[in-house]
Length: 434
Image 1 (cartoon, helix red, strand yellow):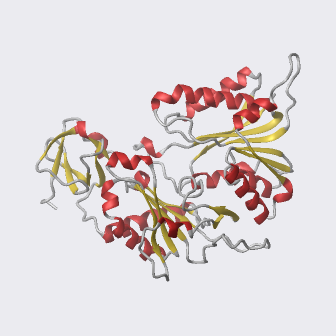
Image 2 (image 1 turned 180 degrees about the horizontal axis):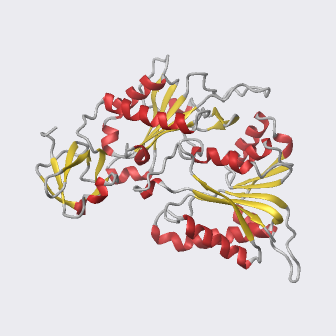
Image 3 (image 1 turned 120 degrees about the vertical axis):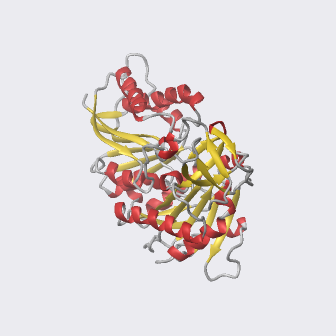
């Protein structure tokens, strides 16, 4: 290990690394003892030559080094197996009944640049089988891998080998189609990394990946038709899994509006929990059609209605009244789970205006005593700022709110407080007092 290239940090730049943050930027480096190749493992020391850890080097990235361990370790197949098993143990402890969950969440599991999602089997239903829907088999889950760093990408075979040994999956798909790869000098990648019992295992054909789409996935006992090869993220919003159940407690007997519904996660959980009716809104016609099929597959279609529409435009139409008229509230529970309105700090002011607008409209349609369940998935908007925006909208609509629940991401997306980037999802359930 002493033969590894050594990176020395400038004075005062070691504290954050000692505390657990894995990223080292170019401007924090004092000097290199020798020039490593991009993707190589290097050892990191402070300016006094005290050892801090080992990590992957990449001269093309602003994140020059991604620290993997504070110990001198060899990064091989055994390393990945041990680290992934440790991450899996966290999920088994905090989500013991889950069949679908994120196994590895990059920095949250000290594997910067690597995401692994496990999708469990959706059992057969009374609905006629669709020939183009491929269910996973019991004990043969599908794993979806997303790699965003060069060091991890160069060790893809090790990662796949470790995953195969731990899970014996039916298939491992790659969804490394994130824009951040270009900052690591990487092109987007995708396809089938492993498929059991086929002659084509180990290839990376996009056509083969499409063979796994759509797939029936089990989430909290509900079945979701999911596009694992080309859908949002790696297929489903697994970070909301616990929140789907938590929000559904407000749904019994309620008229529910599920905005930005995607595949119907919140709405279908609400319908199962006893909602009188759920109306789904999403701009994507494909997502709405998938939601319809998901509702039917779970025996919930009769209490659901669907609309493919821009949510902002829909709210404007529903809250438009003539002078001296009032909007008549229609809903007992409104769920707002929009995509991120901001990707960087510069766009935060515009994002906050968007959040205020949608909350203002939603509050006009919510009955007194009703509940607003609302979420923000932008890392750049913290929980306090998000709540301030909601309260500003409540003031403008002359509504008084009681906070009855606070939400975060599901525990398979662990938060490491020293790594602020691991915490991004926040939400509230707010009851309209008057």
